[in-house]
Length: 364
Image (cartoon, rainbow, N blue to C red):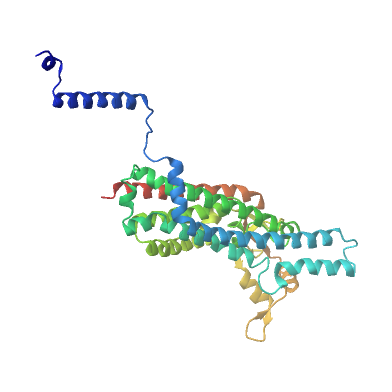
């Protein structure tokens, strides 16, 4: 009888042991720190790098080749300009040879030179941004692998930001570095007065504009990828829209960032000014185009055109007491124009990136 009182039923013993284990595990879990937000940001960034390292490596290789060319040729151009600028007297045959050697880097050399490089660089922001931003969201949405990512402790918002933010920052920083290198590369020609910083093919490669166009192209491609969920469609559409927007900005929008100035005379007074238009007025105030003046001052050319030299045109204008007028943007507005363009490019990029996040979060 006493043995039976001291014994415990097997079922009751097991239940008691399970409750004790559960209590101990609960106490341990309450004492252990909890990690909020699921997968760590560093882990998400590493996954983004692993998935998109090929596109990043391709864009980085293109930018690196461009940077290497600018660095090597920039050293040669700076050395040639230093030798030419230090030569005295400037009219001596030796100085003329040094001048021709320096000028040859600008345009007389065959192939790539300082006149063609700015045009080639203008294509890099659109290409690098589209081919990097196109697959960043579209590839996983297209293949359906995003469903696996969203079940591993990573929500849609964290998943999207972890893909967009590191790539956008890295690409924009690399583009800004390349634009600074291009500014250094071109500086001898600017100092010599051969070119200003406002020409259409130069302005977009300097300052913050180059980095801004790169970021905008990336954001546009990423947004189109979230919208269409097709990588090829996102890339090709981003290339088309980015190129069209860049051309519209260069040919029209940029000149309206500030009201142009108007002056009269043979020139605006500063070789770095951006001349927008020019015309003549007669002594009676009648407005005439430069082509009309050239037709009056010229003589029939061999192909039915008009053959008029600059000296002949100036002599004709002076003898008839015509006034020459210009509308222009002064060279001193370069940085204000850069900040204006960089500002609206950044704002539009943030809108597109926000829209891409919204599309991913709204996806059913």
